[in-house]
Length: 110
Image (tube, rainbow, N blue to C red; front, top):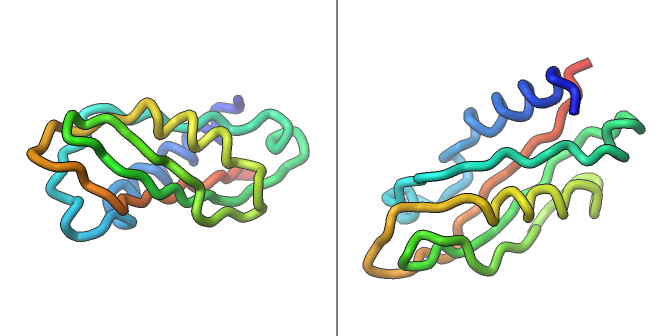
């Protein structure tokens, strides 16, 4: 992956880190975050876009039921964001938190 694409993706993730999450879910502290890799085929073809993932954080802080609920273009970034979100974790809580959302922007910066 190009360093430029990685830096822009990382900046987009940190800028959007808490903006997409529902108000009640903001109490869950993230303990681990992984950035998605830019899909090689999309990078080679100069494709940019985004994907929004909805997921549940279980009581123990692991991610469950992650699904892509919106993407542009469809199907290009889905696998990358689902793989990344599976590596996220949150602090334990007394109950699961459903309806969490995160948007990932993919920009080549050129």
